Image 1 (cartoon, one colour):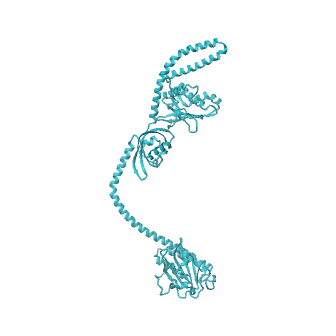
Image 2 (cartoon, one colour):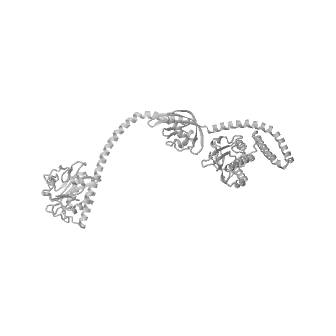
Image 3 (cartoon, one colour):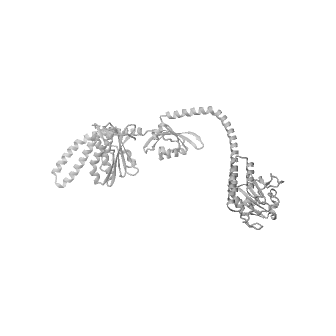
Length: 588
């Protein structure tokens, strides 16, 4: 009867030490096995037709072992029958076109389990009598070995061997001896199958490519003129966009930027970096981008005129005037055109003009008030001095308090006089770094008493500007003392001076930072106004005068809050020629 490798022993003597093919274990058997493996590899690598290759392999096996029959059956698909492709010892009347179905009673267990099969005592096995293998093997076959040719989980075929007449039945040792050989054949068949499929796929692909090439050539000829027109139209559109004085950015419904013309790249400080695919928030700041997209999502697809504050990649805030128009409809939603202009300087200039206009009016009023108050104040001051000498001691304290307040009024009137007329500049080349060092040395003792640490970052080379030393000292002293008063005690004051171009002009930026409570946001726009102060004893003239002095030096002054806490005052002055070159300037 037949059995699988893992099945129960078959009928018969069951002696696995007997070898039905005369390949007893030992050096000679191993050499023969290696020889067959080598020959198998050589045969299946040769450029031969598959039928010839299989015949040579069967002849090689039959010529090197003592076998009654050697059959090689292959199948084309998972459900196909196994057909005889080559054989030795096949009965003369057997049909070589005969096939063995996958559900053959003898073969079915092998196909299901994928394991070799050893058959013994076949004359007594009813499955053998019904099997389609029987007509393909010599008469009176009592034993056989069926080895599946398996590669990558697929059974390509069967190698069937029978011992010679009168020999012992097939054994497990026979099966194990043939396994390396069948493994080599299986891999070779898998490779040949893949090569055949690749060749068929290649031929099909070539035919498809030829067809598609012909179709594409015809379509290309038909579209060539329209493509040329499209390229010309695109080139014209790009030239129009690039020549626009206004900045232009296009973006989609997800806030992804598609294009940006050169003026937009300049305003947004993008340089030569590509912008396609970047987010709107990366170019304009999270707050502006989110608010803009919210408006568009609410189907307000056209914004005629609006104004907003953006934050560019350098961290600088800018004010822009903009409009948004839908460009086209696509499956992803709208694409929009954002046209905008940088109106930061224009807005700042407008604010400055309005402030200066108020200052002129206040200056005129201040001049009149100062003139009208000065003489009565002088008379009152003289009388108070006389009373201080004549009155008894218990009244002198009250008189002294009055005199102190009169002196404060006199100081205010003096400052009003400064505001009421333009102070002439006595300008000369000044090393701004040296001027900063002088002012810090002047206030060092006061800051130390308040336990305020000072951090200074000033380049080690002269930074020349053209200015009036006295007026600049007054401005710097005002700012440093204001910062110290904001800190109070136990804090940090940082002074940083660096080269920085602004509006294409080289210059220097001085930043004074404090660790105080900062400036209330709603008051940031008013701190340089005349008579505006948040201090109980302040006059509101210090920063106003400082602003006038900086403007007279063709510079600017700005106040802002630091994200880490505290306030920052930034002053910028244009560079002047000095004895030595100061090095390159970064953009403001």
